[in-house]
Length: 102
Image 1: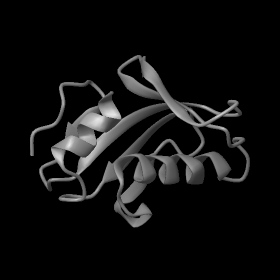
Image 2: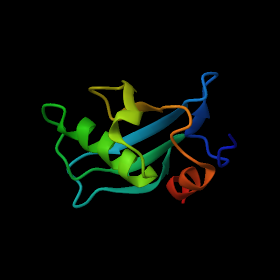
Image 3: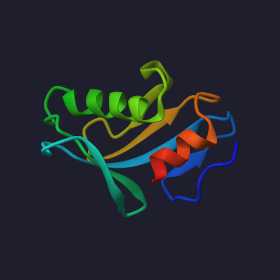
Image 4: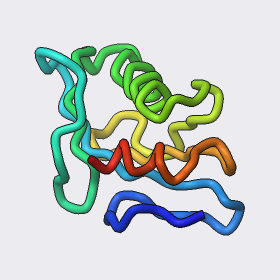
C-alpha cells in the first residue's frame, strides 16, 4: 500500500501502519491540528486521567479512518503525550490515509 508523504505514517513489514501522534489533552474539541516534531498533533477533549485520553485517541483515529476500534492499538506512550498507534494491515485504503493527512 502507498501512504501519503508524511513523517508520522510508517509502514511495517507486516503491512500494518505505525502512526506517531502528539496529544494535547483537555482541548475544547477533538481534532487533528497539523504536525508537531514529526508527529500528527491531535487535540483531545478527554482529560489525561485513568486512560480516558488514550481511549478517546484510539476511538478518534478509528472513526477518522472509518475502521473498527479493534483495528487500532496503542503500542507506545501510554502515559506520555507522544504516542504510537498501530493500524492493522489491510484495514485502510489509500483514500482513508489521505483523509487523515489532510
